[in-house]
Image (cartoon, rainbow, N blue to C red):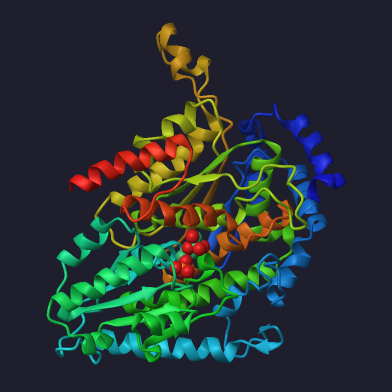
Length: 544
Ligand code: F6P
């Protein structure tokens, strides 16, 4: 139990001792230079400056001690060894194997897994090249111009986020590859609006679902099949328009997709860790298999760094332990992800699933309640948009929000002058959060006394700055793997299972009878609030 460790108690006392030291004072004189040198790291194409955090060298050394005592090195070794670290589902969590080279020694339950992984990768390469070259056509012989990925959660967010991040490498439907569309929500609007823009003769659908039972995905897949049938594609021709990504061959076949058109993955890959598997087929279709391969190589470079770098120089460990510091010792409830790149606009949404589904837990591995805070609420949008929305709260609100700024130094697409403006804003926000603006400085600048308290910035607000030179597939792979491992590190320290998600079950179970009640085919007993909501919705549905 981490909270029983001596280092945990020492860190609590240490926090009391340093809580009133203003962050900016740690940069005074020559201290600033050496602080930046001491508190920055380079790995796999990513540069992290973590000097603007409310930590001293002693804090970092205690946090590293905590990481070691909590078992980060041991559990990391167990993950790479394919042990069943997902204890409640009695499975390995071996997403690192997905990006490993063919000869890597990964095994699950004693069986080597690399041959199967690379066999699927080879099929993905073949298929994506056929579609992109026009060798794979729709049933009427026309080239595929549009691909819809139907999936949700891990079967959507990862590939959707990467396709957007690499959109500068994608084609336009005619040249350079098909256009990609993602449909996740069971709200029919998303699917209807997507289909309205497409020509069935030139559309390919990937039904992407680990279980192939997820309500949203199945409903969207069935409606899309109906759309094909209603628009000139015959049942016997559907095979040219539908492929599946799943672990569940039987359900794929029951749905009517030939298992020959199924791209397999395995139950030891968690949904939110799956974009490296055949779940990434949409990425390979959008930007080409070579780019997908580079993404895997970037993930692999971060894996190697995570596996081998000493804890204090280990990017995922340092980021993870800073998160533990803020959540468990400073009691900060949220964290903001601010990518200064519209290409990374979906990265916060991706991290919401990665971190909150993984570490949004209150029970330790042995079933005891946790005695500390676990995952914070993760939120954010692309900069500079956030500056004109919620940054007010981050600068002057009553709660402190640690921010991860993420920025490519060269933009994927440049218009003269834009990128310097973007980067300047990114750096300025981090500087303002840390330095603040004092009442004295405002008075010296002639600000009227009545306005001074409103214009004071306390500063002392922490942030990380994560930079990369370019948004290449390789660096995006490294970035994603960095946050995957950071999430893992935090799960280890909180002593929770980061690889299950029982918390999503109850709502799904309760939705089934409610749906029947809304359709009028059943009645049920609920609390008064739920019953009245159902009655209200039913009254409207009956009229429509
Ligand atoms: O409901 C949560 C969840 O199980 C996620 O963990 C998963 O990524 C998502 O649903 C989709 O599941 P599937 O890929 O099985 O359709």
